[in-house]
Length: 237
Image (cartoon, rainbow, N blue to C red; front, side, top):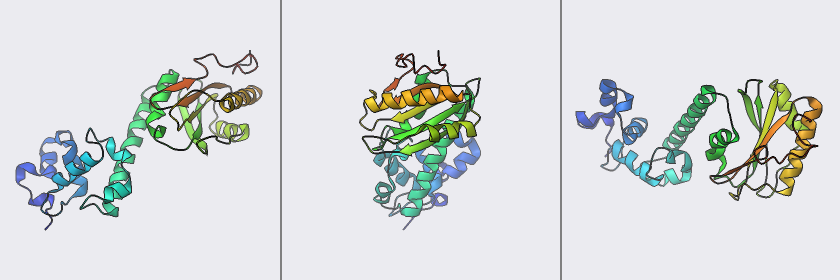
């Protein structure tokens, strides 16, 4: 027999609690229970929500983004539809948080950029290379994945990068990619790509201001390490 939220005692009903005291009065489990709506096998929806949170890491709601759909479906009472709903809620929350952070203030450092994107890619087993387009005041105009590669390399051309930059009317760009190994140290290929992009940007008048590599809780900034040579400097000096 399944229990709906309405069948719970009044003081345990997340819907009523939310209506009376507001969404911020609900615990993480209660918020998730509102999405689940029903429990299973004698357990309430709140009990089921607690089990999901425990299976996804147990620390906070961020585990919902990391847990996979097959892992969710292994939990009794969670079918594919509910698993997809949970993953969509997690993705929606992530995008809302990123949108808020983007509008809050322009990026002022490589560290801010690395922190903004690191969680998205530090568990990936592929390299993702993408370009960030900025206006003259440092506001992010857009970001786009240019290519997804293997664990060893990613194929990228100046044409792909600067078509995106020109589409966004960028004043300058920053290149960013992740290292699935977790080590953010640049490879010889990374140095070669940075050189080629900086030279193309100098010709087109859309300078490459930095190339940031993301690792596992670490990053490498070509700009911070003064890794642009005289021929590679973004301003052409």
